[in-house]
Image 1 (tube, rainbow, N blue to C red):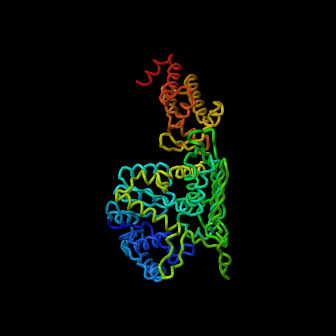
Image 2 (spheres, helix red, strand yellow; image 1 turned 45 degrees about the horizontal axis):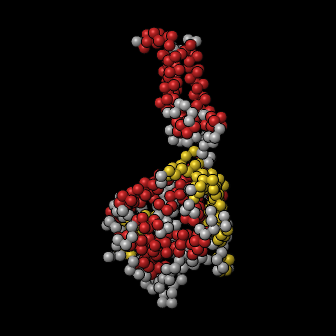
Image 3 (cartoon, helix red, strand yellow; image 1 turned 30 degrees about the horizontal axis):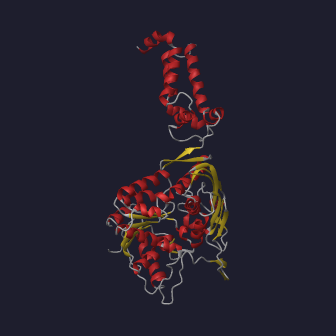
Length: 529
């Protein structure tokens, strides 16, 4: 079988190492995606390569950058690729033409702003193209599940590039953690220096946040460690001030912490706590590009991993003391001058994807087999997606968000303090109370002759419209109610408080109106005539 053809979607730092017209100043000076795929092509695992962005005029400079810093650095490693759009064109939808140029069974990698992942991935999946997408796969849980369904329907493999799963220390820790009994506590921290905000300023705080960007790593690690637990509630907190002073939009958080409640699937009385913190406002000269560590505690032991400082540091007059991470991407060539980073977990992540797609195409595995291997597939990362969106909603709505999973269908709900009916009404129905007051006022106005009966009746019916009731509730509770239109009805049903449906609510109140006006029906009919 011919090697896998791959389209690289996105031309930025992670793909090429090219940022703002030149080489990135981060630890990804020559990128990861392009370099890895160029080497996999040299090894015969990948065939034709192509790349797509939105501005074709970048490609001449990108080709020069790759030739100078990869071809000349690694014994003539071929960095050629077809590009979309043309060098003199700009086209935000160029990915469609690039994907259309592929054949079913080919593959794409997606390293673009978070908001674009879903449409690009779906477009590829529907054309039977396999997909590797950077984390987070998507920003919305609903989109995650739609991609999962589309992938099953079209028989394609979707791999979320959670490369920390292949970090040797993290992988070993995950293996050992699963032997320590029930999950009890997880704490993680990951940060990058303020300089990254210059790279990410185009989307930071606008299209995504630091939690989607960095918390996604450790949440996925935690999810992969505890397959017998599931998240049920997320409460988020964010710090602000540094990023905005550096020119980011007003709503850009500096640091985001997610507090997550987990329960055991077979015994909900067993609960665990996850705390995940991410920041992109670490000091400029912190000595590491990514500070990263976690602490996992279970019933029979605990695991601590600190991957920021790995016992390897270099001190320079200008840069000062710096800790390097060759376990991620090893850029030093071998004794023959060839690229020698095949053992880096950044490289391994892509090779796992390529090998899985090749095995799938050759009929050696099924999609179910790949899920069972514990790879970061859509199915194996759905809890991470739920936590990340719940965290964003918790920040925006300033309240906890519940995660509900029933029969493999996941959804996000408003946290409900429903054990006490008085608390229920106090917290969630001040809007409904205002509604009742308006109904009562309308009835009194009709009784006392301040308005005509038919006008009062119509006014009351307008008030009873459930959308109006929901709007009032949302306004009165300061956005602390679920944005779903069915929230009031669902809550009543959940509490078994009659009436049980929206129609019942309207019918009961309308009947009350009819009884009030039963003595003036003739007057009302005359007015209608």
